[in-house]
Image 1 (cartoon, helix red, strand yellow):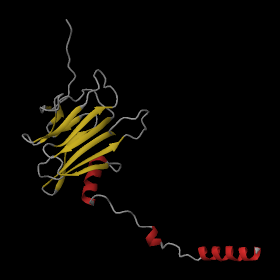
Image 2 (tube, helix red, strand yellow; image 1 turned 90 degrees about the vertical axis):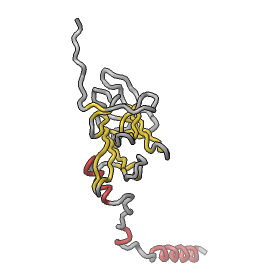
Image 3 (tube, helix red, strand yellow; image 1 turned 180 degrees about the vertical axis):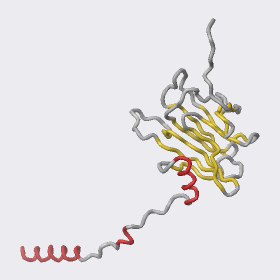
Image 4 (cartoon, one colour; image 1 turned 60 degrees about the vertical axis):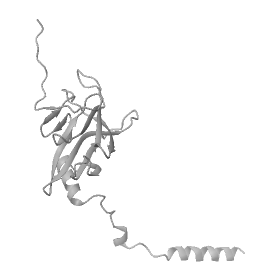
Length: 193
């Protein structure tokens, strides 16, 4: 009986050992990229090699292909908050076969015309991003500083494509009316008398 069990165990081990090993070319296959190389290259040019693509498509509902990409916050947060935590974000649009940056979130929120209204004057080192898409309005993004800006408050800033001026702009507190930009952020200098 013991000899039979040993023989069966030996045959099983022999059969398992004879299975074909995976071929190196099969094992070395990398997963297919999620996005075309052209898009990944444009995003890497703007945000670096650690950039992550969140959305691709006609985000503004204006007929142009756009890409929303971010650099995530590296340090783990002590509290769990909804949304995506980031240090930088960018929106790119394909124009004339080339990609160009049309919106930037780093220490401030900006478009090609300047700093968006409601952007804190003091730099913000990290943001929480939440977004929604609708067929009528396209992509609406909500940026909230992760920490209270110096001399300011933690307020959520809504940003959406303004079809009248053809660029992303911030929204008022009710997220209905577009606000303008300012070319320079300045700290008000006033003297008390």
